[in-house]
Length: 350
Length: 225
Image (tube, rainbow over the protein chains, first blue to last red):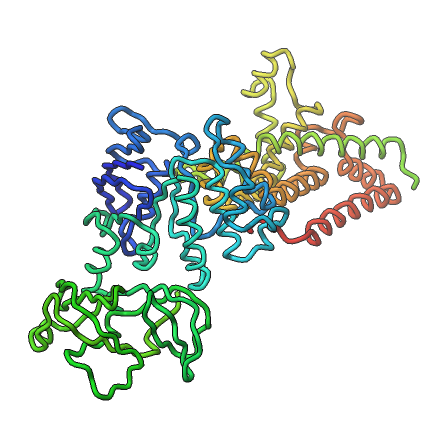
């Protein structure tokens, strides 16, 4: 997908003034509330009319103020998925799924109901009414309905915000899967850094109606470390654990991490804040932290008043943060060896 | 039951009038209600007020102005005469036209509320899935607003059945043409024929009660999934 947009839209005192060019299959739009994300969605989908500028998707104009081009929403083939799933309550799941499919020109249809139902694991729900579905099921049906319209772009406005954490991180693999399996690019809006890191290839960052940059999710995470109370969030994919003296020992790409026993004994994705990693230059003789990992410092980066330390822990990557004067004091440089101490309770399952 | 031929004729005329008015108002009131529900125009307030006028206006006032408009020297009368139809007052179709105005808010307001309760999101999703505005209206809006259509139709029909003032002003009291049930009851009372008045009144009373019962005991709307 190749998206070029240059637009201005005044709404009361708010001005959205963007000049954005992005390419990729999974694009994130990141920004705080009031940054203009939803206005951008509305302009892209044709729900609002920009005051000026142009929008080109894969070189074809959706809107051009100068040439007076403004494709109506139903001709843009940009399928919307909102945070509230918006299923049609008078139609069962099958008819909801087929709503866009039946309206897609026959020569453009390339995805069939059976395939989508299988990938999204909604085959058993086809005859049910939307009111009988759980939040996660509803969101998968909404996603399936959008995919079956064979859109040129899937546009998702905070698609996971209405779901609780558990459901949210169960839906993300489906979103990534549909992009690959059905070759439909998506552009999604979120204010969640973790969602950006799990889903996006590139991220356009908005603030107060303007574009502040297009970065990779990793660059964004490093930039945000300076402002975020929870620091840099390390995302760890851990295997199936075993009981270990009241704790759970999770395999981590050839290493082992001990987590509090209260965790569910299943494999999954966990987050670990950079603030919860203590670095020691030498092996501590006695320490209460249950995880003590020998690491090599790959690199250091500045993030506001903090310094980020990128660590290589036996092939696994972790980012810790410490104050710049501590870096000097411990003489931490690229290539040196340190010990990373992490409490068993510092991990949170996504 | 002991209804006279003129009672039955009046009841049949009432049903015919109410049915025709309900069908016309479904066709006329739906786009007005849709526009009022969706527009951000500054004309929304004035048009809403005009639609609601019959709720507060004495029927005689409305009837008087409609009579002037439909008379030979009024704009509607001039038009109908020009078209060869002739003046509408004291005809069935004059009564229909007057009733359409009189019952307009009973169709438009429940529909408007129903359309507003759908919200913009289902319409936006449907459009993004390739549905044209007309397609969105018939495939999403109409099914979701079905309870509103039922309520509006029942209210319009019932309200037209109960019309009296406007009927007298526009239609007069012509048997088989403009003498509806409410006017027939008035005639019975004037003639001190209370037994006949009772019978016909009881029919309207029971009908009105059943209509309200149907409205109040209907399943709650399930418009949002």
